[in-house]
Length: 378
Ligand code: GTQ
Ligand code: FE2
Image (cartoon, rainbow, N blue to C red):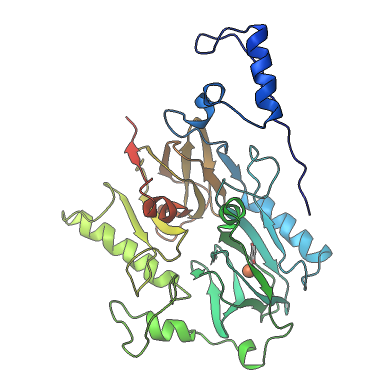
């Protein structure tokens, strides 16, 4: 595939910060066009703004609508070699109809019918799965079958072979997050097909994966396991651990010892047990719990995030948009737009009585480059 070349088009405009429009200036600009040159003075406002002005816009997708369409896709669209996955991506309305939730992040609902397998492949894109409802699919990463259940977070660093296998007689939907748009603009992608069929051993359905048996013991590193590649070696962060961490964090705060982000707002970050850093080189993931009646302080940050409501209900504000949200709803927070959440009683029954928000972002990229900034608005 080749892309069409675009000619340089320069419009001389009269503006206080622009040179006087004269025939000589017009001629200079035609000269620039011919040589494919663009001067800074016509572009500076767009290229070097005072602060990030994201092209992406805040947007909300309702879980019920996504699931309805995914079910329909389950009836009409087979899963197999070539298409690879029955994954349907969120397309930010300001990003040209491309399947990009934000300029760097892909978010999709994926759907597997009873007994179906999504074929093995690998790619440089870093990925994770997050399960808001259902069970029955095992994701097989490097031959290790990892169960997926409600609340589980399953990161999978780039270049690992992976396939998915629905071992039950129920369909299952979950959310995928990847750095597809980031690798698209940076042109770093590689991809390979794997085997068409999984072995019988890989189609077993153990309760705990090999990776969990090695790596899911708090603060304990398996000594015999040497160097691990970038990205967490732990392939599943089970809900029971996340939930208990949040419950305990709020209890410590109630006892007067802090530990939370702010009063009534607990949060945990999923980390790589071999480094303590983010689970993936390009993606950060967190679970936030906002106690009923609490409103979080509005914060804006460089980089973009996608949130999914895991439990509870409330209202969220992103920039100048406010939505009522409940279980499964997904929304986007573009760069440098303020975000806050308020937990309220709604028609969804929450296990914890709070608003639980799963969040993923591109923060590790910007931290690595010294481009991370954050501020509380107010
Ligand atoms: O499950 O392997 O949503 O490769 C996009 C690309 C899921 C996957 C997506 C993928 C996958
Ligand atoms: Fe994949």
